[in-house]
Image (cartoon, rainbow, N blue to C red; front, side, top):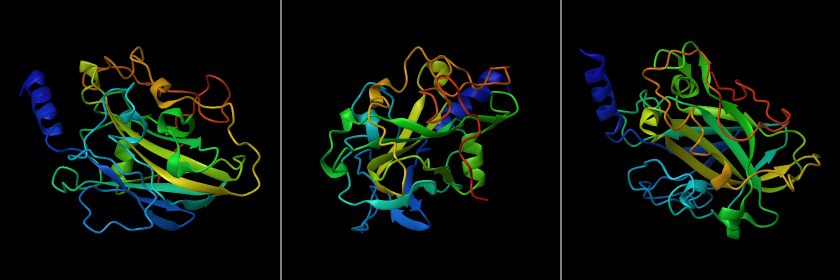
Length: 268
């Protein structure tokens, strides 16, 4: 089979409902429901923001209000509690178990990134477009070449049954925040069409940290840029390099311009 036929076959398969959603947030060992459009009996204590994407599909427009927390996202009325310095885990799944048997489609390779934003009050009525996001965890290319032959963060997520996790920095002050877990699929990045899958949840951070993130972070429309060549124009099929820079702002606590390639830890 020619490379071009293989590429076409891969793209066709990747477009057949290979989507997903964040089903469960686990905070300090306690599970909180995320959001699924297909759940006929949602948990009244769910912390996940609702969205309207019927096929669990991606957001493509990085300047749209939908890029904040997914299509027509609305804040939950509930919060999950988590202590600063402890772990938050995110379980991704799909209602298509044939294409996504392990929580995420193999074809949708790319990074996994976590952000938080302070609500400066009540998250249930916050203007989502004004939330300022700080990156607290990231992982992109884990090992091998920066193409389909390498190991990406989404591959580790699949191996772990759809779960990734991030540590809430111990310096974060008590308060109410929105947490945003994001998976980026690069299978169409060569067409300048990277696919962004994100979901948000309300959390209440406890502990003795002092950094309330005031004056920090960026609004969602400024997280990425169409000039980010590792997203727009990058080919995960043809690239021969062995590195891939994770896009977006610097990781919290890493210093300006510095990035950590292995900041997200996976349950095993």
